[in-house]
Image (cartoon, rainbow, N blue to C red; front, side):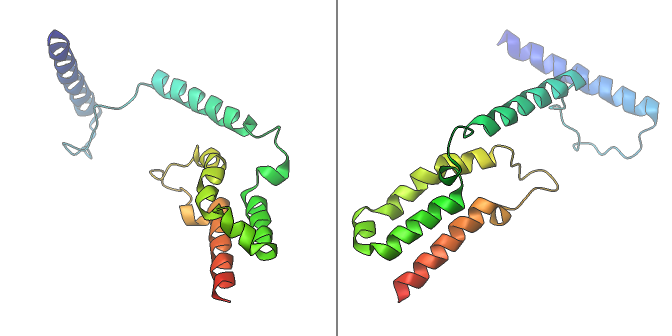
Amino acid sequence: IRGEDNSSEFITKYRTCRRQVRECSGEADHHEGMSSDDELAPAEVTEFQKSKDNVLEDSRKVFEDVHADFCDIRKILLKFQEWKEKFPDSYCDAYISFCLPKLLNPLIRVQLINWNPLEQNFTELEEMPWFRAVEEFSDAKNISESK
């Protein structure tokens, strides 16, 4: 309980300090309730960016020892499409539609590591290459089933 008192006290002091800085600088465009107590110090922002860059660099190495045919979603789905067209009974008996999400999950997750829908210029999911590949595979699947 004592720790909660200290953090509440710190937040109040922090807010007061920020308000005084705004008043001294003549910042007229500030609207009460629009600021955040979660603002990070420059050192924390730098540390976060460094950690993020390390994670992104490591994520590029995840599939570096995997043959290109097995880490490209479009190529993987093409192989399944060929299987379905050549051996439909075997394909159906293997319950591939249930296996594909688990198979593609790691590949898609690696591509989503840097995706942030809260950024201004983020890429829509529907525009990502993996999404289009899955969508095309689904469309091809629906066309072949309707024949």
